[in-house]
Image (cartoon, rainbow, N blue to C red; front, side, top):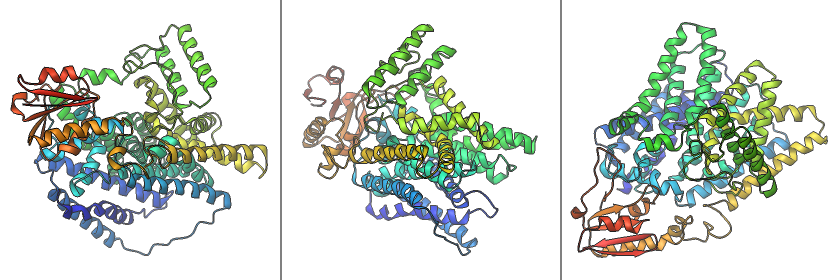
Length: 630
């Protein structure tokens, strides 16, 4: 891709700043600057998603087309900002030393995450399999049409976060800035969580504690430098929640319906599980609107649904056209969603999810809690390893405390949130706090009823943590305000927060697979090897096969792989040629004929590759990867 378009990657953040200025609230609202940021994020994110859908419909997903789209978008944003020009007043907050410590810790972690995000090559496991290959397919074909593939997740998993990556891919020609999408989403999570705390009546200290709880959570710190999608969907679900809270005391306007619909649509197009968090918040909003506006609530609710459908509808229609179901093939519908919904199974599933989320390095505690859950399951006649409630062939329990981006637990943040939630339900300072806590509790119940337990399920809970963290902030603010400076309660809170800060610091310093110190440090590891820290041996094996195919002069190359294999390295090594799949699980997109390619590259199962190699070809294998030539 021409490097001439690279400067336009500055257009989205510039447009964000201009729109945040243009859409700043004119009426008296809670945390107006953060509301302006939420509005700007929805406009820029929505524009990015819809521009991909529109250009893709016309087979025009190219760098010049996206560059033109951003030039037009930036011009419109500047015009809007100019029309609302007025002096802005900035004041320095008079924080106490303790509050500066909270803010400084979170700010420091955010900055360290930014450095790691800029230094690290994308190396998330799922990203190598399907997040990033789908971006390459779109860039290669210039459209969003499906393609033959053996990895159904490349086409069946909602692509909202990857749409954002596609802009960076086409404008820069590479993946050097990919990690910034999740980093920006992490900042967005801090914005929405602290605004929710303010909307629930929390003061400055409650808001800072909320930011501290979210920002120091190891899962958040690690994902903020990743190409996963959990922070993106958490940020959009948080936008739904904060906008819904605005609607508890004000009638819906066309602008608020548009914003709430956009937030819901962006949640749906990014990750379906995010709707588990957005749904109860929309119900909370709807009940309040019934009290305020009565019959108008029907029209407002319909408006939210229609706007959301504009974002998620085109993708769902493509999936329906391919598989006859908007949620994809049975393999997908039966793998992650719960297949049993009796009370006992849901309860045991929730207990297993909670045990994994709260896991600690204390092995006896892990064993005892797991044994208690297993014993309880046996007592009520539920199989704790039931395939209908357990993902794939995995088995409960697992060790989840280690700072790995895909499975690290959050015992401190989780415990604080649980205590804050229970107290908000039992002794809320305000009715809206109890209502919001009930909505968060509904999220937890729905998650337990809809998502199977899995070893890496902690990352699927990030949205719930962001939504519920303000309840911890409110509780801890009350504890600190009622205690003397050196009381036992104050010292306990300080100790917990200090431990949480240490956990966040260790996560960004020594977390996996992007770390600053230790084996595999970003500062001492070659960029190519950094991509393979999950599977170090594969780095040379992929390159070996690609070099052989390149030396043979092959231009059309067939790929043989299985559902969880890494495809993205082939795009990095051979992406300037025509890459086609020799297997396909898509009923309307058959694979390419092996006889039509100049070479074949394979990963995983040698026997599967051998079955597709034409007679007379030579198949060579090296560990995980292989190649075949005439």
